[in-house]
Image 1 (cartoon, rainbow, N blue to C red):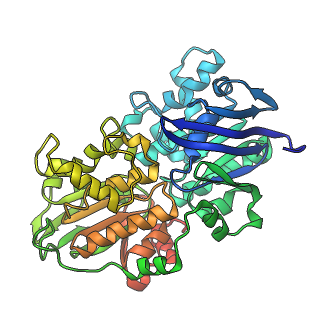
Image 2: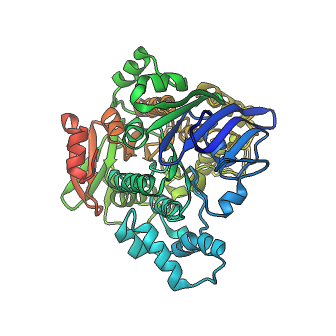
Length: 506
């Protein structure tokens, strides 16, 4: 360690879950007053180490030091004392409590105060105003269970930022934020790092963000440290990706790009019928989506989510008029939409996607069972599930394991795979690559392009403009208030044009 006064030092950390060795001797050290990028592919062990540092898991071996003291057991005491705060990849809020209660209660409990609604609201407004003052004023009394994924992300981050912690652990904190919110978050982090000597461990798969906010990086690969505390100015993006073991061969990347967004009519043996045309209208927007098209949605969450809810039966009140082959397209529920050939992949995989208490086979077959009105396992499912797992390179010891044994990126592939064999007429995707590494992103891109080639129309919302540019030749843009502004086509679909149409930085 030398003479550097590290706030946190983790050496040779080991952690296994049953026969699976997740961490095999990871080293990581953070100094006061720095933002430290913690990088690695899906399944490398990043979230596991963060849970050990934040006291959510116990390590099997290795040494942890915090504030110059060696910790014999867990770091839970430091977490309880408010010295360590964490934003997990899967959010840890209490849905039956209000925004104010979720933000304020941990702090009031530590201070030994009686609960005061007025004091809690003041604490919550102060914390949330660091990122979004308007949301702060409007949300403090709302139940967390009524918030969108994007809004819950803001609450979780605000709770951590306002905690007064010495060490802040951020696991994919910007995955559900707009570009402007990300910019405000980074400004707050920089101020806390400079003024209060805060140490920040920052996990992201977005290299542009890493360059914007971090000073140094550590890379882990397959449960071991591949790069330890290297200054970001001394290493290229390509070298980082190579060390992660996530690089994509030049030929493979070119092939993925060249597949484009084909408009091929659906096969008659699938749910995607010939000639299924979807028309979306509101205000002066009139957009026709042909079979095989991949149409992007760009902008802050309010606008895209309202359209997604109208398309998938998640809301029965909408200002959008949607038609399929000239007939109104409206569903009483998401199950009814699925039976009509409309698939949906939520970006909130923990609460609206993955069925955490059910094994992988049930997660894979969930959509089929809804469409076919079945509630139990059929004889063909294990064989079909095994084929899907093998074809998609989903690393699972058994189809009967729980999804929690898979990395976050692999769980996301699982959600897309539900619809692969069904070949729906329309597949609606809400941030489907949230929190996944570069290789898994391209694997998901390939899955979607395959479905489009077979006739499925795809509508894809993403806050990553580079993703929309790569996948879509038509994008519907929304402004910051959720109003549709324009439809961009072909050469117009650039990061600059998207930023201009949405009012959000690329």
